[in-house]
Amino acid sequence: MKNELDHSHADRPTVRLVGANGNAINILGLCFRAARGAGWSAKRIAAFRAEATSGDYGYLHAVVRAHFEVK
Image (cartoon, rainbow, N blue to C red; front, side, top):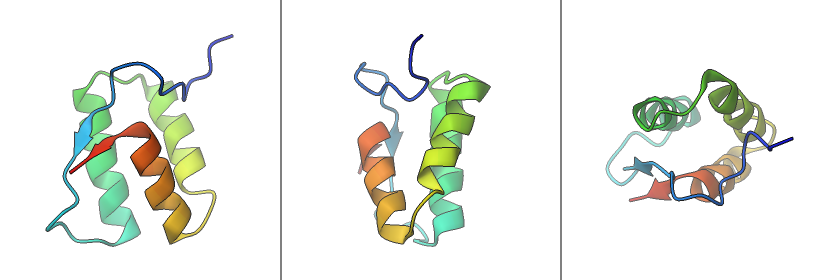
């Protein structure tokens, strides 16, 4: 079965964090918007949310950088 968070393909949406409000809720919102815009399934977005919120703020950033092209 394919891992919902398989980020090895080229469909890594771009998220612009420079100049954005850096709180965790805002970062997640920007990521969800970019993921929906890139056509991610609801299941994939939910899997990303679960991983991104399973640690501290530093872990959130690491997960975001693993799944998105961060600008």
